[in-house]
Length: 270
Image 1: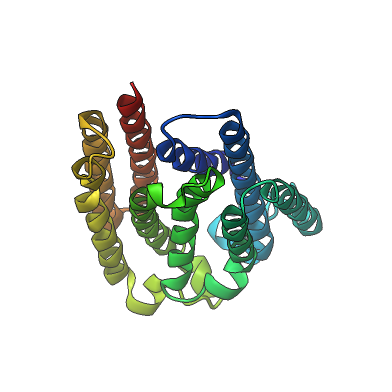
Image 2: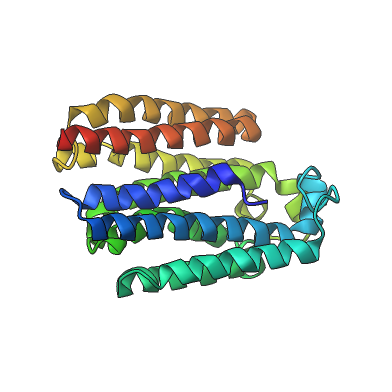
């Protein structure tokens, strides 16, 4: 239920937010970064679990192999498990500076309310998930007292996430329609929704050289981000014919883009 790969990826973004922000590390920075990463991993896992709880009827159509629909976990146990993870995230977040605590508080509320309040609103649910992904970078920076250092990276992550979320909505349109949700593909049509996703991804690709142009990263960053852009562009193309394949390819492109951020930062330090 926690989607470990997604939870760890979110924790990696929090680490990257701190990593980009600092030129030198102290023991306090290391502790704060570890707390921020663990908070993000626990909160993401909790959000995934509670989303499974709220989406259990939809998942019987869209994804019957999920733990609740296939009977591996009861809805009540899933709910309590999610609450336990949220509790751990809150406890760790309270160790961080005030701005990081504020970001964590907003994000925890967003994670809990996503399915019931935002998921079925055209574009808004996608935007909320995109914000959560981008804010993980800012959260990591805030944990070490430098929240603004990763704003450009956060914007790029949010745009590519928005595109993937829209493509996923196209993939899940049957179950969402059955449950009465009004996602973006249901509201404006599948092809138009895919065009919106492609535009968002195109903006992210066009903006990806900005960290290099601002001299945040050097040539090493470009050497990795250009292939990432190519993978994401191909994902947008595939999404028109096969949304499932498109969003899967886009996920790999996003992981490669994260690698570009890491390589770019390491090269600067070295």
